[in-house]
Image (cartoon, rainbow over all chains, first blue to last red; front, side, top):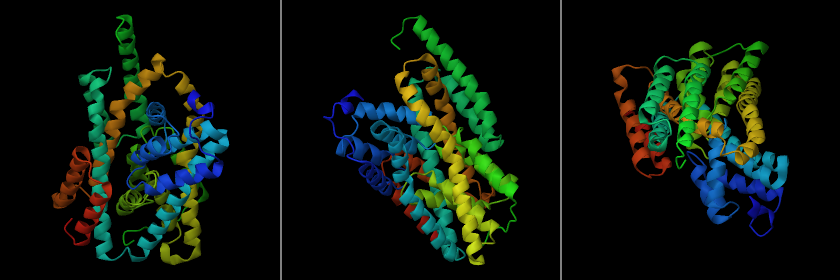
Length: 199
Length: 202
């Protein structure tokens, strides 16, 4: 962050620049914006170094809320305080919201045709796959998890069964399995530290 | 939509809609999409404010459109509002209700989480080496992944678990595999799904 305060690094020139930059980002992101954010902000505009991006992304991910919106807000906040945070989020959401509502309105007019019904059913099946596929992708990140594979897989299975098959309300699953997991991870981290491990 | 409902929502119902999304907001670790199963449980199963097909097409449409995926929440609100107003053809009142639905659901899902993020981001950045911060990251990881898988499952079986739906499941499974194993652009997958559906193959 220090690198951005000495005035040498590229940064958004104004709130308007911030707004349109994030609007541009959002409008390029079909089926998820993250990849675009990385390419534009780190590689093109260089507002963030790759390291800063990874750190911010980790925080955006563990805090609740849409990850990309969280990330935009953190970046906006860094340059222009709360006004920057609001501007970045507005840029991320305003035009995509108008587009998605326009699409919904258009679809509603012709939604009764069997073709459209079928197309939406097909796209819905694919969307389900996209979300599950993202989950599958992330499984490999569990290899380095401090809790170890058996605990990770148990937590994964318990959560999946509770939510997908038993329809348990999310809050109970997060309070139950989540608390257990965090306490267990805390213990494991403590053990590693006590052994003087490299973590 | 042929499967749409006609609702008579009271002020209490609208407040309940807002407060349900407010309560989900802080649980949306890993993105709003991880709370989709709970939205489905509440809106479709419990309250009957949305049909299954409205729920699924909201997510499909938001995925197909540009922008953050959280916009599916706006579409859920939009559809609840349309149902409350008697559908798209019922005139301007249903548009007002639809916009009210958008405002309430988006406000609900965004406000608590963005406020928390705003306050916590700097703190988290400064204290990222703290043991509790790291324990939270590590502990939540398998749960966040399971929530994504569960969302996929619930969306895929939303049309019922009859064996007649096997083409839908096959398509879902195939897209999951392609996302997992290839770098194919997501738009191609959505377009393929749309075409397969258009021709009545799924």
